[in-house]
Every structure is written in C-alpha cells, then in structure tokens.
Image (tube, rainbow, N blue to C red):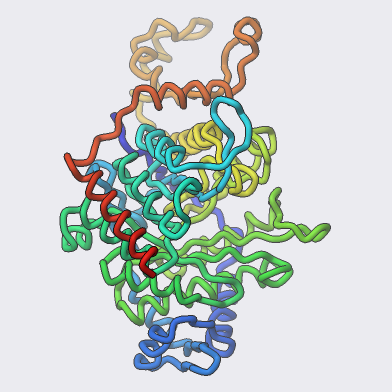
Length: 487
C-alpha cells in the first residue's frame, strides 16, 4: 500500500513580480538593521553579541547588518530529512515535492457521534493520528488538537505521546515553546529513535517557533529553539501577523513585517548553529475592519500574503510551510469547500513544501474528522492533476482509435481495460445517479467521510512501539510532571 502521497507541482504562478519580491527583501533588511527585534533571552543576546551582532542589552534588542543577514541566510540548507518511525514515510523537505500535514491545535472539535462542539482530549488526538497513519494523503502530522484533559504545563509531552503511539509518520512538534517542554520532547524522541546520535541522523520530530508580532522573540521560544537545535532537530520559524492589529493595514506592510520576523529567527539560528536545517512558516492574516475580530472568513488578501511569503522563501532557497484550508466556515459547507479548494490550488500552482491545515474549521479554532477526510480528498485530486499525463501512441490509444473507427465505442477494447483505473476516483464526492442518491437518503460527502472515519478507526492498526517503550515514555512524562511539582 502507498504510505505517502506527495504532489509533484510542475507549474508555477507568482502573485508578486521578482521586482516586488526584491523590494520586500530590501525593506526586510532595512527593518532588521534599523528597528531590529526584541530578544527575550539574555543568554541568546550574549551569544549574538559575541558573534558581532549590534546588541542593545538595555532594550533587549538585536539589530543585524544587511551583509550579516545575507551571509547567515546563505548557511541554511535548501532541504532536509524529516524522518519517520516507518522509513517508507521519510520525507525530503525541500526536495521538490509537496506534502500535506494536519494543523492545529484547536481546543474544540465536532464530536463524531453527536455532531456537537466540545473540548478536545488526548484520546481525540490519538485517534486523529490513527486516521493520519492510514491516509496516504497525509505526509506528516502536527499537534492538530489540544489535549485539554491533561495538565497544561506538560500538555505538549502528552500530545507527543499520542502522536508517537498513533502514527509512524513524521511528527512536527508545533506546541512546544519552552526549554522544559523541549527537553522532554527530545528525551522522548531519543528513546524512540534509539539514541541521541540516531535522532540527530534521522530526526523523527521537527519543531518551529512563533514570533510574537511585531518583532519580538520571547525567552521560552528561544530556549526551546536552542534545545531542539542542540539535539540536531530542524527548527523552523513562524509568524502569525494580523494586518491592522499586529501588522500594518496593507498586504505589502504585513508581508514585509512577517518576512522580517521569520528571517530574524533564521538569522539567530544560523548565527548560533551555522548550517542548521530550518524552514519558513507563514500564516499572516487580518482583522475584520467592521468589528476588530480576527478575519475568520478570510479573503483574497490572505491568499496574496501567503503567496508572497512562498516566493520569499524560494528566494532564500529555504523550505516553506504554507496554510491550505483553515477555512473561516463554522461548519463543513459551501464556504469551507470554496476556501479550502482555493487555498490548496494556490499552494499547488505556487508550491510549498509542507501544506498544512487539513481538518480545521473556523480559522483553526475547531477540528473536524470529517473535514480532515474531505481536505485529504482535495489534496489527492490536486496530486493527480499536477502529475500530468504521458503521451505516447499506446497511451493515446491510436491503434484502438483506428480499429474502432467512426460511430462505435471503446467499452470493449483492451486499452480501456488496461487504463480505466488510471482515472482519479473520489472517495467522498457523490457521483451516483439522482435516483440512487434519493433512494439512499440523499447522502452528502460529509456523511461518506464520517463513515470512512469510523471504518478506519475500527480496522486500522498503527505499528506499535517496541515492547515496554510506551511505559518508558509514560515514565518520562511523569518525571517532568514531578519536576513541575517540585518547582
């Protein structure tokens, strides 16, 4: 069985001209040189100062000369291995193919049985990991929902446990923003990998840190970054700028600020850990000018901002994660289908290396197992579309065209039997006749997705960890919880 589907997007469309991208880059250099960024860790500030960075210890601010920024960005590798417990699921991030990921982490979900909104649990996350393990459209997993039923201080470790036991695919530990949590995650990943050396060689987890917009890197995020980097784990950098709130009221201004934040994180990493694997994660959005709320029903500006960030990452030759999906719709409906298809299509014609957000609704505030399945369906369709087709006398059926001739049909031809299954077949799209559809109770794609979720959860068995390892992982979590109590 195919374990991972990936998209080989061959065509490219760009929302911004090369001249505009260069202007954004130059504006980024200006911001980093003259405004700089807040660095909340005195330890990191001292290391930056020792490396020649202009540091103001009174303001906890670092300013980077343009040539310094360019030199550090050039150190970052253009691809890296995202290893998996199942080696067949290893990913070459930046290697030319795009992979779909879960996203998160919402604190709420729609219950599969009642359809009601409720808080998410650790078991919900484990079940989602089982679904992701079974679905070839999912290349890697994030902490796609919060484990609200465990202590918040060590919640990321419980979430990592649910992922390690629920799937054999690569794990992005996106909910760890402290040194304490990072050390625990590394200890757990090292146990599963076999050794610290093996984890460095085959990183089973990756991580990214989020800038507090505008232009502020907090101590916990930086401490987590250095802890993961010390272990050889790839570390990306994320921005979530809100136009009109934490960013200027324009597409151009928001993109410039977002790029400056992400670039500053990568420059800090490459200064402290030259040549370390990193990646660019951009989720800029806006607020609604009518009421000041986050723009949950996003529009064309969000697509333009994401597209420009993709181009900037390619300019730096650094792998990029972009959002696909993340609809503002509160339920799975016309708006959800339109927004998720539009964002996925833009991400496919302007390719990202990791496409995230499968399964979320209401701007990633609610998770839905049914939406997860339908988003995977969109990605599978795009994979087939962008693989293209081969042209030869055999595939074109030239001999059969001559044999059948005018006015006949191809149903009985061997060529038809040989190639009929080459056509994309939907899992959830409704293709039955009107009569069949009505007789079956007018089922929707959501109904079909819900039934598939139940089928997978009742039949799919994730390859278990070696005997005794789950208990060892639980001991690690317990030790970190005890350390919290002692503090």
